[in-house]
Image 1 (cartoon, rainbow over the protein chains, first blue to last red):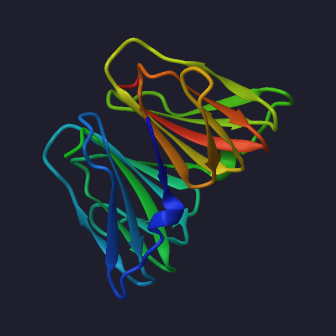
Image 2 (cartoon, helix red, strand yellow; image 1 turned 120 degrees about the vertical axis):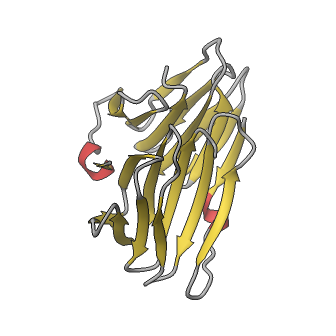
Image 3 (cartoon, rainbow over the protein chains, first blue to last red; image 1 turned 180 degrees about the vertical axis):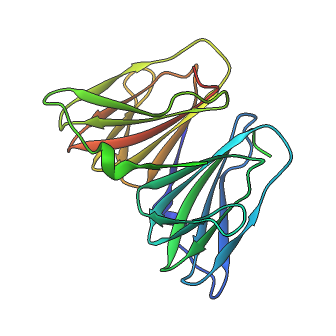
Length: 106
Length: 106
C-alpha cells in the first residue's frame, strides 16, 4: 500500500494543462491529476475500447465536455462517470484540478 | 455519461459510518462515498482476490489502517492505494469523508 498526496501536485503551467501520473503502474487502474489554469481546455477525446473512467473536480470550477456541444457545469465535488469510448473533456473556468481514474489503465 | 455530486451525499450517522454507492452498476469499478463521524472506525478487512482500490480523503482527517497496528495519518487530499487482498481500513479523528474506488467492482 502507498499514500499519494494531492497537496504535493498542486502545480500549474501557464496557459496549459499540467499532468501528474499518481498511479501509472497498476494493471487495474490509472489515476492521474490534471491541473488546468483558468481558460484551459482538456480537449474532447475518446478511445475505441471497453472501459470506464471517472473525472472528479477537486478544486475550482468549469465544465465537463461531451459529444457535440455538450457542456455540463462542473464544480468541486462533482464527478463525471463515462465510458472510455464516449467523448469526454473538461474546460476550466477558474484554475481547476481534476482527478481522473481510468479502468482499464490505457 | 453521468455526473455524481458529492455535495449531495454529505450525511453522517451518529456514531457510525454512512455509505453511498455512487457507482454500483459498472462492470469496471465501484465508487463509494463513506462518511464517518469523529471517532468512528472502518474496520480493517481484505478480500482474497486480485484487484486494487483507492481511498481518497475528501474531508476531515484521521488514519489509514493496515495490517497489524499500522496507522498512517490521512488528511484531505491524501489517497491510499492498496491491493484488495492487503488489509485496509480507516479511523476518523474528525468527521471524515472518503471516496473509495474498487477495481474490479466486488
